Image (cartoon, rainbow, N blue to C red):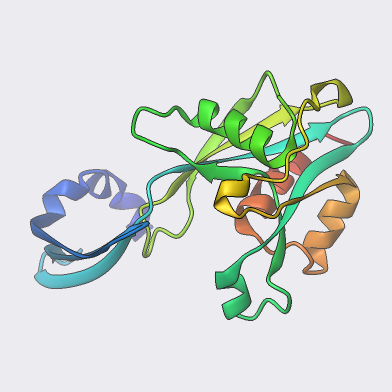
Length: 207
C-alpha cells in the first residue's frame, strides 16, 4: 500500500534528483559515463550517488510469424558477452534486432532494414507492441518491439548479415510451439526473444 500511495510522487522524479555531473570514461563504440548526482530518499533524506552508465543508444526488435504455417523466424549468431558469461557455445537463438543509426532514424525503418539484412525478408508491415528497457540498472538502451507477418513471397535476399561487419547469421524458421518449448527447456535465453514470443503466446497470434 505504501508504494501505491507514493505513485504520484514517483511520477515527479526530477524533483528528487539534483546536481547531476556526467564524466565520460570511454567513448568508442558505446559511451561509458560516470554520473554523480544527489538523490532524495523516500524519507526525505538527500544522499550522494555515483553510477556508471552505458549509453548504447536505442534499438528495435521484431518477431516475424506466419499464421498459416504456425512458424516464426529466428536468427542464430555468436554473442561474445554471452560466451564469457556461461553460454557453452556462445551461439544464441534470437529474433531479428538492431540499433537505430541516429536520433532521426525511426524504429520501424531501422527494424525493416535489420530484418532485410539479417533474414532477407522485406516485410511491408510491422506492428509496434511496446517499448522496453533492456538493462535499466546499467544501460540507457531502450528497445522498440514489433511483430509482423511474413510469407515466402517476401524473401527477396539471402540475408545472413553484413559482410563488412563480419556478421555470420544463420536464419532459422521454426514452429512456434517448438520455440515456446525451447524457452521452457533453456535453449532460448535471449530476453527480447522470450518477451516477444510470450507476447505472441498471450495474445494468441499463433495457435
